[in-house]
Image 1: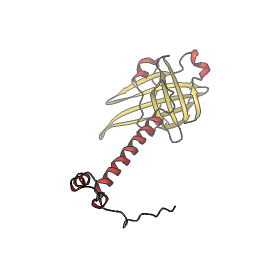
Image 2: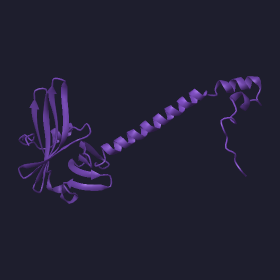
Image 3: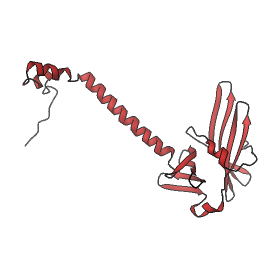
Image 4: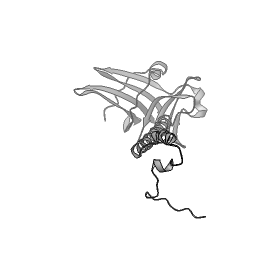
Length: 203
């Protein structure tokens, strides 16, 4: 059996489609038959709803990509080629740093077999006039990693930035800026042991 394509000229208006109905029935059906403009608007609304829902799910997945189920993201920094997350397992009171992408782990501190050896993280904070700067530091071999967020007051209002600064021994080798609106959450202030603040802004 062949199926002929239906062209616009073949399409029947609503009064023809409902021609077998009584006049009263036709009036009721046609009253609820959407116009072309209404149908297009409805399609647009449905498409936008699906698109926004999909975007929200993707954003949530990306935002928490390196934290496992049951962990809370304390700092989540989206970099150009990876995501860096400081995660808190509240039930075990353990912080874990991970860097990687979905399906690939580049770095985890502490490693799974080192979780019982104590926290490698240290917190520090310096207040500014109209702002401040917070750090979470950890060491991996010869490298010191500083997760940071800072707020400066400017003539145009507050300026926010966040990222990861890496030192090899005492030499700064990288300053990686987060591409998202990252910040260090308050659990770091309250639960990570504090140390003396170090200025990491110098080259």
